[in-house]
Length: 275
Image (cartoon, rainbow, N blue to C red; front, side, top):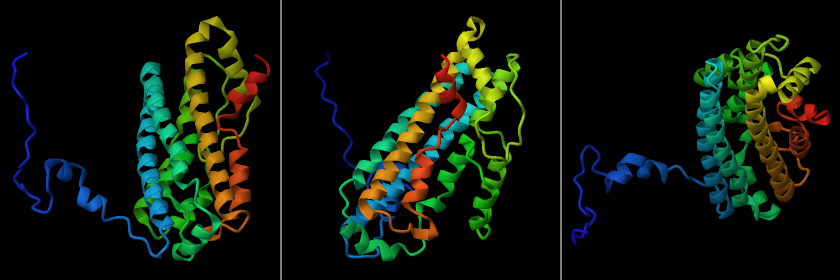
């Protein structure tokens, strides 16, 4: 103990940004951040909607970085690094799932009050979210059409569509360990494959492959959180707008229900019937 009292600095120079009050404000760009919420109606709930949507978009990008790191580690046969990246991503997923709570009490009247201001805007159009779907193996080249007039987004999605996803790299690890995993076009949507299920069954039953069980369980933890996200999305929309058609021309509730019922990494779920 020195007896000295440490006091925070309370005055700072403007550096290159005279409009920012503190180094913290400059670092996180507070002025720009708090200028991005611009409601188009007088309905107070619209502000919550905008903030929640913007937070989700930031978290989509963070999750993409985690999954991309996991994919790269799997390609390098670095299971420890892949598992660490998946765990980071799972924490991000938990926050994403919880973010629906910010909209949980929005009533149909509140949403209807500002819905006209959305116009054709829909979360279905989020390129960051679509990149995550492509990483999971939920791929459709037809969805790129809405980005024809946005070259940067189109090129990123086009490249992602033709690059092996997270699950593709996991299955490649199994193949390099001697398991019979059939090849498939990476541009197609992943659907249940009996041979892939047999490969995972071998992982879970052969002691020589026990280290790969950790991978299977980490992927399943990720998949379960994706399903929880989709279910939470479905229930939030059901509460705020019921069965009305979605914005942007989507079918709304029926599409979300179908998505929520679709297993991610289906063989990892199916193999549990035999274990």
